[in-house]
Length: 416
Image 1: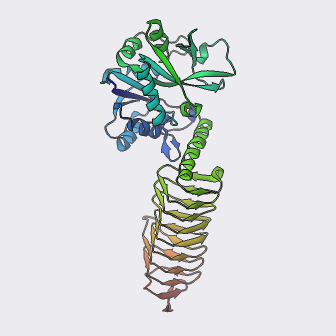
Image 2: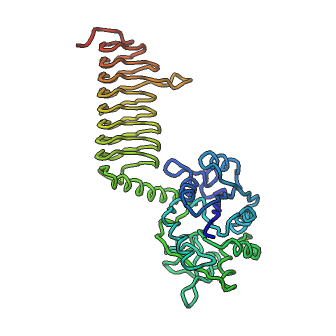
Image 3: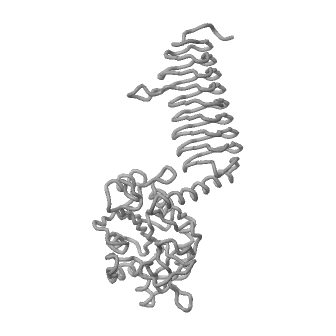
């Protein structure tokens, strides 16, 4: 009886986002908004079924969700007639006695909070429970109305409020509700005469009027913030970024200035690595222990830095692996490269990995030395302990322990 179906509302166009993509596919920290919601919900042991309600550009949303969350089901909201209408489009697919309702554009909710919310719902033996928080009245969110005993009795939409207080308890749009109660009350929700929509919030007042047990759990306001505009997207990003940085700090990473470090999700950083200001690290980057990164560094997706690497200022590395002890301290670009242990990449060195049609591979052998302003034209292989002279343009493979110089580079002698 404690099993849930989760309904995630993701049908909106998001007019205020001023974006051609569906609202929930707008990116936050490198991933769509809906990713964060589904990731948390999918981790919950009580949730046995997930239904995503789609509408605007439904196929785009379904394509992304199925790629990253196979097994999710979908319901279609063909007309944008409000949140009540959205849930109604999914209710016939619900298979479990309890329903969890979340918003696909509220990416900051955490699995821990949802778990506590579900526990509270069962502890209070509620028929319906809502997640709320206290916010300044600048937010366009429904206000929780309570009776004399402190029980939630209704949600009043902002358009229907006669006056507002400086700080109010607002509805998050997250509900835990008995599925039968939900289905019965959805059928009774009437179209709002002002907006012409069916508000899901009406089920609170309906349940209360039927003497159902209605409860609310108040949480930190950060967790319930939705994203409806580019301004709110920036606000959500700042929260997400701070959480990610705190995670790495707690794991022994040193961040000189958290306000100027930008780290996406799915980044691994080893202990005692240090991150200097204005370092940008994209998703799916792996960094070892005792590394030094930045300042003014960009590590792009697919990059791996092994232990004890030193990558300095004004460097970009993309889809490349730097083995233990590699140094690249000043300027330059590495793309689609594999750099062997203890190699040195000089200031201004560039791997030209794109020939106009394809991205090509470069291998730089262990212990090699790439001089300042050298250009390696991929595909090319630099042998172990080879030396590429400053300003050289390498268009052919270089043998081990060989010194090459010039434009194009030619063999000069063997290294000792």
